[in-house]
Amino acid sequence: MYNWREELETWGHFKTGLFHGNAREATLERASRGRLDVALTTYETMRNHLVGSLSDSFEVFLARYMKPVIAM
Image (cartoon, rainbow, N blue to C red; front, top):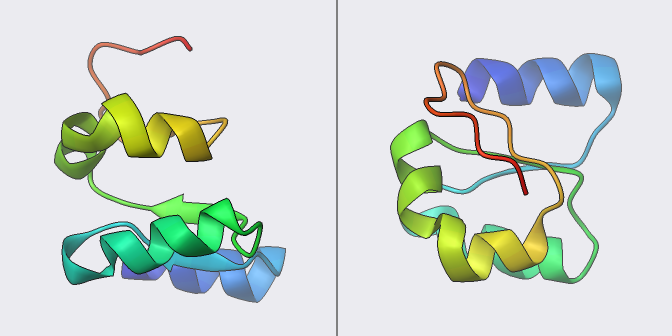
């Protein structure tokens, strides 16, 4: 996740946040205020939080090795 964050901020000039561990709530708050372009997380964290808070705040979910692909 940290490598992706560095790449996105360096080459894409995106505002990123980590939706993982203790940073989940702060990242979700930044996203809800429109202060975040990309949230990075693990597949397991995304799967556990897909229903509810995450699905209300993000339009696209990308995960490496995502099974099955979820269409929203």
